[in-house]
Image (cartoon, rainbow, N blue to C red):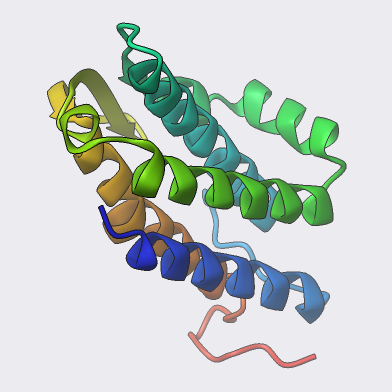
Length: 167
């Protein structure tokens, strides 16, 4: 499995996160997460993906469930444990390296094709409630999850009229 798209998605997310941090005054649309909450959510998604990939590599049964990554208390706890924005970005960088290693040479095609019972929510909407191949979970990070959160971060650099905020 090629990991170039996943590496690119992580790089884009981390670049956007750095831009928000450097802006000094990102806006936060009503009802949306701030940058640290977005990054903490991503670290939790990464951890769940690493856990599933490691379990498959170890021959164990596993599941993939993103509900804990939506829990406000858990998100705030991760922010505190990581030491804030800089720590979250460092953690995401290392988790991305681990996922690229697991999704690339570390797992066989048969392991990547392993069906993993998955439950995926977005806000309060159930998106997936069925087994997915591990490769689809990893590919979903590169194609949907990380780009979506990159867009959220970029949106924090815009004012209410959609204009880019400058420092």
